[in-house]
Length: 281
Image (tube, rainbow, N blue to C red; front, side, top):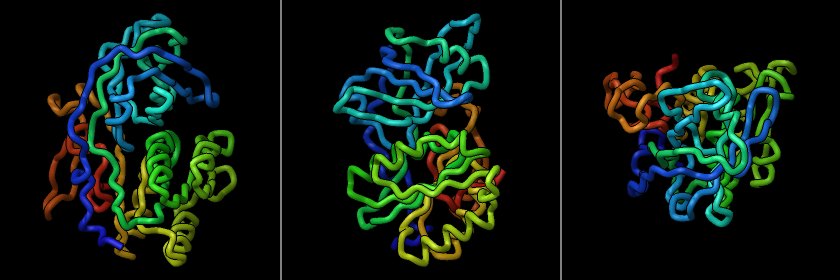
């Protein structure tokens, strides 16, 4: 086990291979009443440069009467060099995502990426715990895929308001993960219950590292468990981004780094940070 203060996700940044391309839409289908899955055809060399936790900046089309101006950051949901596919999972909430929802197979979509600092997996970790809620499940899904490729065990704790909004459950199971579902409707998503689940995993030796995305409440619980047991942890943060490459400073937020409060860019210094650096919002 590696102490939580000795893990820096930046140490595993791949060599920069950022591309700006128009990719063909293969599918754009509803997952439930709020989310859609977008699948793009992508070249093998681009997909081989992707890492779990990174994102692409998407040039949303003028479609359905929508005219989005800025690109939208989108976490990688899956990347499959053998199939030539790049996957995204997104929630339709505003002008940009409504326009994305109008895309049909055969359309072209402009993308820039992969961007940002990815998740890191130490060579001696054999048990990863993923804790996510809502669209955070999309960000952590490729981490489970990467773990499967390395033969590492994963426990995925998936949270949502209602069982109907739980996503990626079958996807996580297909990648060999042990899945634990907790929901508001069933009264199982409290911080106390989440803490108990994590403590059981730690006690059973099934938590070499903790990863989270998508919830402030979850961040606080995961931070505390990581601190109490000296377990490494990482978080992927979501933030509004205008440029996605660190120029505009739109995504700056405070972090604890090197003993001080530092204002860092989520798109450039992140989106993945060591869990102890994150400040709850």
